[in-house]
Length: 208
Image (cartoon, rainbow, N blue to C red; front, side):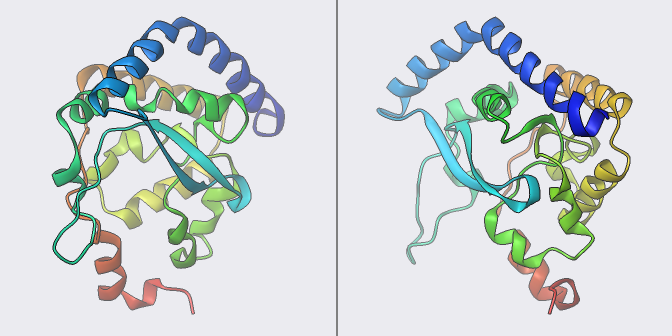
């Protein structure tokens, strides 16, 4: 009953209340980042959601587009701005996702929505991460975030789906709050080719 009804109801009510509560921060962030980036303060990207349905993820912009001599985007660590580091450390960049939660694209707690092209490389077991709405935070995020390897993160996502409950969501929410306040496990991915390299070294990971 929680998974089918109450989880979504709680998400809807809490997203409204929290958005109202932190609306001053939201407005200030829009104004400051609009000036800082001299334009659109938002970052949007297609991500797979419930049952693999594609939706537009909304975040505050933390990076700029910088390319190498071959026209390839530089690693995240080379593109993140000073303002971006601050809003990531404080998780302010995640605030716009309250709108994703409000309209039903996301949940507060669930597997983080990864890139669309990852869909082609999941194992059958890993695809079960899309049996629930993706979350702003999840089991993998409170278990090490980017400090653990991608296969382990995906396994934690599956474990979350298999053990989904109100109690477990509360535990993850509390750990998330603690991590945000303490700044724990806030890291920047240093390479855009990490997943590609992993696939090349582990061809058995790619479904035929």
